[in-house]
Length: 319
Image: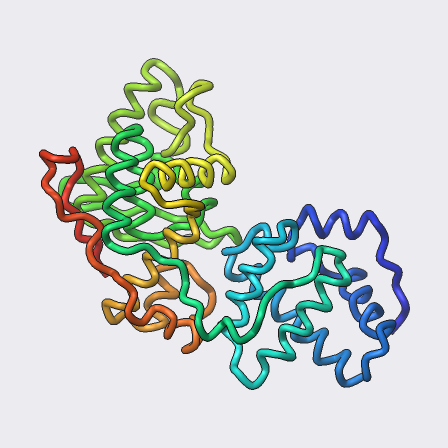
């Protein structure tokens, strides 16, 4: 293989573009780094393949967008990935990923492979989901609709952001939304009747907020409540989720925890790996090690309290 130097500009592109930017010269650069560290040729090949597998998983899952820029997100991503790897290869995989982060100068990975066996995906209990719905309802019709939709179908932030009014088919008989994955592929997600009614309410409130504006009958389904109803960014959506979580007494709540909660409910209800992958818009099926993490998760319905007490509907999020 011809030697290729990794320039500062290329590393900057990797930091900005995420794992998808690691191609061409950058891949060759990592292999040169492994050779320079004195690893045996067979070890170099193994580390390269396992590091590449980690990066492909990052792109495919789209669950750790900051894994190449934030130390906490880095370790969460590595721990999550190790849970998908068999016991026999876990240590060598961790060594390969540590080498990758060393080459990228993104800090030492602080993950103990033994902890993988004791880790459970951070899903929410039924009582926590109920508190979230109450907290969201107290903020605005938009935030309530956002939280209800998230706890029903578990979309990615980018899928929420890309939803237009025309992507939500809502009626008294039921509803569904058309979600667009980061790679452009689309899928219909069926909604519970309760979620449909909440989204109908938000659509009416949205039209009132934008009364007289061209965007009242078109444009994004979820909008900013200031600055004339602009489209929400992924960062704004993550901030809204975190604020609602704080109001509900749940620290550091993220959209990925909401997404994991939906996956836990599906697995607990008996859905197969292929069914969960289809519902969540994944291009892969969770391996047995990951599915086992959901065993015993509290997947009770999100809320059963009376509407007169909290102003919210009684939800039965289905499979």
